Length: 364
Ligand SMILES: Cc1ncc(COP(=O)(O)O)c(C=O)c1O
Image (tube, rainbow, N blue to C red; front, side, top):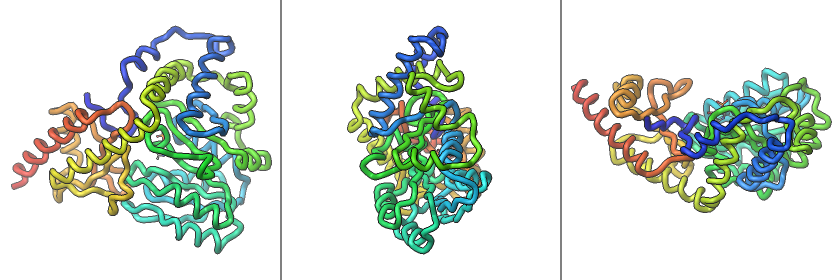
């Protein structure tokens, strides 16, 4: 199968082998060596000196962990959303009883840093900003550097970034740009199965955490931090996934971060060019913000997304992701992060060409 969903993503053979290693005591020295290496290498790929917490959960758990560890009931939070995953982050903050102010941009558009700054200047009570770096549902990447600048110039509330489909594939610089919490997920460009979320937590976030009163237990940053001092986790960790992570991080660092970021830039451009050649329109309205980890495109009029998706899978072994929310049935999404090459994208484009040609013939 050519698994081209934007998470889970394919894993290299050596990562699959690493998953099969025998189980070990998570309170013993082998685990401590494993965990220490994973955390140190995660810091390198995150390009941060901040502590990187490793929690057992999918990415949504990381978003929830950030909210419950930073805020108190009634705290005012600006939730910036450009799509389905931004809406999810917003919802989590609402469910936990923070005072959420929404700033929603239309699907296909990036967030306007000026509009964010304006909202912050108009309301100095805002304690935190939630924003998605790469919106996986629309294939749009926000200009995170410009957003961080705008946030810092407009009162500098805590900046919490969902980098689940960007960190490890795109160049994100939490320390340099001033991101207080940056969240990632193992099943994206990391080439690891789903189940682990990682959070780089900066000094201002730790200070906020000390005063934060939202209820929390499993995802408590203090518990994770205390155990990490001993290269352990507070609760039983997903040991096999950490074996996989150790191997995947070695592969990523052997490739080198500049080469890895460049490969994703190239694959993004390659995918977009191929789709344009097929006459398909991209969901991002301004290509400057088109994502280099996932590409979303509109299906031709009257062309059933379900039927195309199913034929791609059954006839060509190509697995794409459907649209979410109001985009369901109208778009498809191609993941190109992690263990992926131009040849994988070629196979998608060829299959798409065949399927769309015959779908059109069926309609005519
Ligand atoms: C940008 C973004 N945020 C959040 C999530 C949610 O993560 P998960 O499905 O791992 O809980 C995803 C997953 O696709 C994502 O791409």
